[in-house]
Length: 173
Image 1 (cartoon, rainbow, N blue to C red):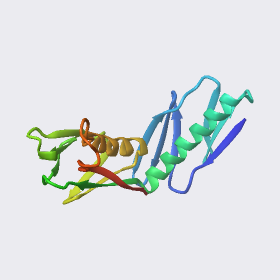
Image 2: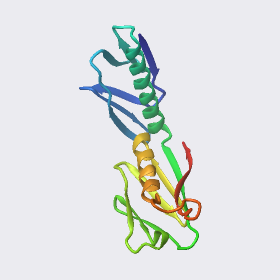
Image 3: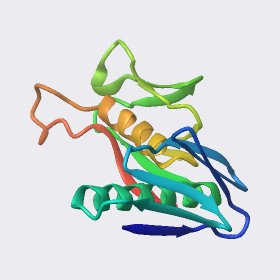
Image 4: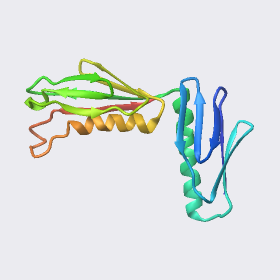
C-alpha cells in the first residue's frame, strides 16, 4: 500500500523522529505522525507514505496520515478561519480577549465571567457580536472555536427558553 502527497510550490516538508514538519508562506506546522508499520519519506517535492502489509488497518492509517498532511499544507498556504456569533436575548453579553483567554461576561446575567482557553498559534478577534478565530493549524483553530462555544453551554435550563450562547456559524478557509 502506498500513498503520495504532492507538495505545491512554496511549501517545504520534512519528517524527523516521528514528527512531520510542513512550512509555507504563513508559517510552520508540526504534527506527530508515527506508527511502526508505516514508513514516511519526503523527496523530490512529494511525501510518500507506504506500508509493507496490505491489511485494512495500514490502509486506514495511511489515508488518515495523508489527510492530516493535506490539512497541514492547506493551513500553511491559506490558513483556517472559524466565525462565531454571540446571541443573547435578555442580558447583554460582553466578550473580550485577554492574553490566551476569551472572557465572556454577563452571560445570562451571571456575576462571574466564563473563560475559554485559546490554544497556541491561534488568533481570536472580537467585533461586537462576531468572533473570528484564525490560524494555520486546523486542529488548534477548531478546538479553540469549540472551547468558546462549549463555555457558553447552558445546563439545567430549558434550551427553548434560554437560547443565549456563542455559536459557530461558519467554517472555512
